[in-house]
Structures are given as structure tokens and as C-alpha cells.
Length: 439
Image 1: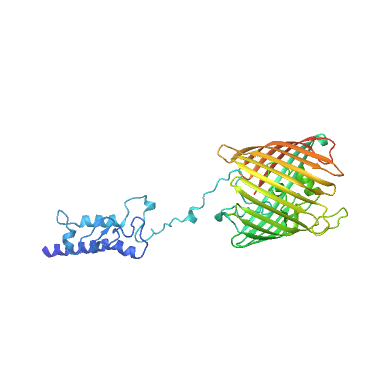
Image 2 (image 1 turned 90 degrees about the vertical axis):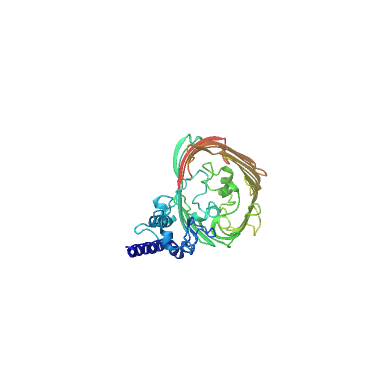
């Protein structure tokens, strides 16, 4: 009887030693759990007299059979409870508990990839997938994890208008149906954009090289020349349905600026008030006979002395390598005050008709509605153009309207403009409604 009891105690003591030693063996082959910090003493082995998860060991000077005994002389129950307490965490949901011997068979461990990314709500004004030709800083302003090697983007504008010059005859049009593909690598970006609603199908087609720090860039191909802030602004970001009479008169009529084939260098220093310098050579315009003129040059310098204030100066010189007949110099400023955006630009220069000056002012306020994805945006603007010299004339425009925005993917724009454009006999009123979406 005594021998049987001795054998039973020996077997129980051996079983307890094995159970208490399993966590130490498991730790030798796996990382230490967060609950057990190295250096606290809680990771020491029980058999050496230390502490495992707060359970004291027996020590080398206490017999194993005595340590196994409880108040009744048989302590196997307490040893088993201590071993189970050491092996299975007492806190957390069953899904959060970690087995010391590895993952539970048939149950895959949760990983960030399987959990998926939470879809971010897009608020009005946040940068989205954008054409580099419309917004050269689009990739730089995108979070690192949101950048893509290949981007496909597009937009569609549908417009209805009624013009007093045409006795308010209603006109429906698709002023823009643009689609493009862009590729971004570590030191190179390329983009091709076409507008299916324009006679000149190809809009942007260029390659942009950059150093590792993205401070210096080199553009080659067809893209916007760095002149006039109103021209450089993305048409999506503009709160008006058109760029205005000043931009139309200088760019479309007299070929100062706009999209051109060219080669341009750029320097961007974010630490120096966001200083950005761009300059390049561009293909010249055409004369009245359709002959291509010599190359033009354009340059722009901009900086952000305050977080909410940006300033810029730009210039364009036509036929810079020959006798200069056309040139212009512009200074611009933008001020952000919460939801209010105010921008202004002054332009002066010379055209074949003589010297000219122009002023552009634009203000809009974005007011979120509801959850923040919807917003309303009242807008007001003023432009003036003065021609001096042998040929004198003036033009002006006053525009006001209301836009409704849904995130940064859809907007409805209603505006009224009263303008005296070059060639008009008197000022006239025009109403416009434009629906726009992009992807």
C-alpha cells in the first residue's frame, strides 16, 4: 500500500514537473508574449525556484513530493491549477488568447492584410487621383501608402447654358471628356491624357524625371507652360465653369502660355517656404499664315511664406530667340482662411496691338453639410482687361454662383456671368449649369 502510494506520488510529481516546464520549453522556441516583459523576473523557470507568471516555484531545497502535497497531503490539484493558469491566459476573449504551443489548428491568425483597409471618407477639397498635367504636385501630396504605380483617371463635364447674345437660346455641350493613364516609379513619372470632346485630342504626353529627394525635376513632352496661375489651376479645382475672359484672350487668342511641346526644369524646396522654381523652352505659336514661329520661354517662381498664404510670379516671352513682339508678366496670391479661398492675379505686358493690363479676383467658401461628404460652395469673381496704345479697349466680367459638392468626385455648378468680352458691343448675361464627375 505504501509502495503504491509512493509510486502514485512520484507519477504525480513527474506529471506536475512536465506541465510546469512546458511553458519554458515553449518560450525557448517562440517570442516572449507582451504580458511577460524581460527583466521582471516573471520569465524565470519554476524548476529553478523562480516565478512564472506570478506563480512561485518549489525551489531546489524542497522535495518534489512535499511541494506537490496540499492541506490534505495530496497537492496534485493545486499543481494542475497552477500549470493550467500558467499555460492559458486568464484575460481576453477566446479569440485573443494565445496558445503557448502555437496557433489553434483550423484557425488562421488575423493579419493586417486580411483585416483590410478601412475605406476613407473623401471630403471636399482633399487631393485625389489627379492628372499631373492638371496638378503637378498630385503625387507629392498623396500619402505614401496610397500611391500607385499605374493610375487611370478621367472626368466628364456636361454643360447647359443660355446666353443673352444669342437671345437666350439654350445650348447643351460636353466641354470635357478626358481620360488618361499615368505611371509613377521612384524617379520617373509618365502620363498620357486625351480629351474626347476636344478637336485637339491629345492634351498631355510627357515624362518627368526626378532625383531621390524630389527636389529637382526635368519635364519633356507636351504639358502646361508655367505661366498664369489661372491657367495652371486644375479645371476641377476652379469653382467657376470657365477660366475667364482674361485667360481666354491671352492664351487662346494671342498664344501666351497654355499647353505646349517643351523641355522644362523645376526645383522644389519644401523647407524654404515651399519654394518652387520652374523654367523652360516651348514650341512657338503660329502666325496668321499658319507658320510655326520660333521658340518661347516661360518661367515661374512661387513660395508659401505662411501655411495659408501662397505667392507667385510668372512670365512668358514669345519668340524669345528673335524679335520679341509679345510678352507678359503676372503676379498672383492665394489665401486660405478655413473654408474661404481668396485668389487674385495682376498681369501686364505687350501684345501686337499694344501694351495691356489685366486683373483677376476670385473668392469661394466651402460649407460642409451633414456628415461632411456633401458641401455647398458660393462663389464670386471679377475680371478686367485694358488695352492701351494705338488700339484701345476694355473688357470686364462679373460672375456669381453656387456649387454643390459630393466629396471630391461629383459637383453641380450653377452660375451667372455678366461680361463685356473683346469684340462685344455691350455687356451681356449668360446662365450656365454644369454637372461634373471624375474617377
